[in-house]
Length: 89
Image: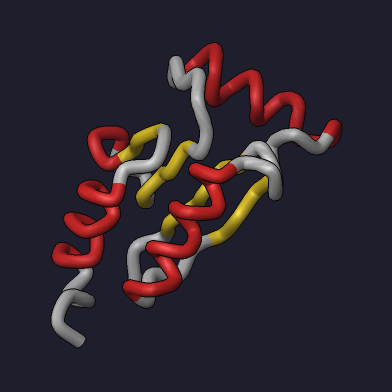
């Protein structure tokens, strides 16, 4: 299965929680990394400085740059579920 990673700013982030909830509802497995934690400072800098994202969550699907997005995007999550064959299960 395609590797999915959700980079979150923590439990207070409503968009992050809703993104994870939708992924869960569709049966999409993901790793959750909280970038607000100090030991993830370099990763946070990479997401902002290298990838250019300024809002959370950031969702990375495999190593496919075109399938990476930021913010609450139910449309992108549904597209991912369709690609993974998880729609209609």
